[in-house]
Length: 231
Image (cartoon, rainbow, N blue to C red):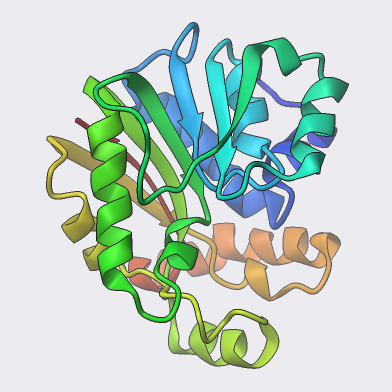
């Protein structure tokens, strides 16, 4: 992956940047679809970070969310002079209005919210809709919150507003949801970095994740699952 200026990386990832940004290199190294001129859809886009990244790499992007993307997405893309390469749509991930049309679907921190209040069925439907929307050979590039360790569960319930509502996935959950895809490659990252209260603290904690915890904890205790699933 070519070097991305830190300010741009911050606009793409926004939170715990050092951990979540690992998805970008993984997708480019494991994905077989070239972003150049690809038709890509970002679901659950909020501020449009992944749409920004994909369009900077030459993709034609549909930036979508339930109710439409946040206003910050429009401004962010204008700041990079990319508005002409991105379209904005109100898309419910449970009813994606495409079939065998897309080269790539992107999601970041979306599936847990779709499963709010332990709605596993909605998570399954969303993945099935993603599969339906892709062309044969198309790919789903995802970075999603894992259930992670007992410590993560306790701290989420105490300090995260939606911590008790989200259905955080396990690795087994995600592999089960992706059963229709012909292949799935994934990795997990991030253990203590998410406990930082500021981005500076999260960068420091990411150092410990990279050089200490990655070698001693089970992969299921990391809090981010990054993957490429091919139709």
